[in-house]
Length: 359
Image (cartoon, rainbow, N blue to C red):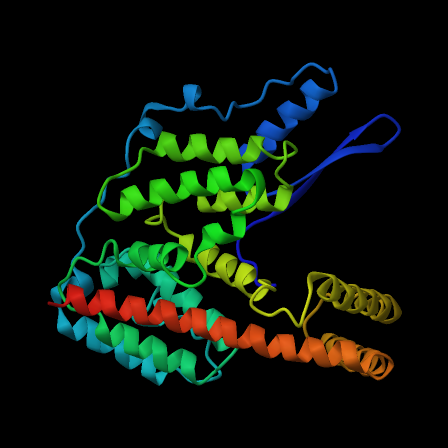
């Protein structure tokens, strides 16, 4: 499973250490709202918490985010040429983060390249995902995209448009995965707000925060925690920095587990495999003891032993259940093909948008 972004676990306990409920989520809003709900349901006095309600949002949250004008590469073709050269010269031993290579300094990406950080996030996320499936295609595709970036253009909405097309016009359109049950309501509300922004309208920050609040409060009211978290992550303007790090992995996660597209494998079988791998990992980790804290030969040996023993465990599992693992291997090929297709789609849309911007 590919997951990016912050997550945390909180457990509500009542009396003698009994677990009342569990919270998994990416935001402080979720923590505040669910803590308030738990206290009310238990008949306890709700503690004084910073309220996450629209009524108490400050004035700035009632406005829309102002879009600034951009001038890619500062209108200087030599800045682009230098960035492309750094991308080409990066060796395998060096960390290849496209936005950092393009700008020389990740912290100065917007100032030097003069495009939104959201576009840098999209380049980085696309490269990161592809590099785990095809190490040769990933850097070549990055170069093709950067080469297509025009000099002196306003690329402020390019990343948002590419994400919009992935979410709502691609074969992996996201609302299909939320079509059943109560999740369909907030997913369509999110889509409508994204549609409004896609045609040039700006949605007030308060509207987004109200929708996030709704998705949080649906937890335990017919919407499971994981789906609530995922919808909360989507209930954000696509122009926001970091959205690529949420959107691409989320679409991939749902697409590779869409067993309608690959009926030879099932969620139950996937759970069995995951259970086996988790069990083996815990056994091996316990046998090896804690990982050495300091870097060096001892830690390297610990990782080598971990890899060798896990490999042995998996080979034993495969001998014991060859048919199950053969189907798993076939599904892995489907998974890789799906990831490749999604990345190729995003890259093609991005290239098309950049070429239009160049005219």
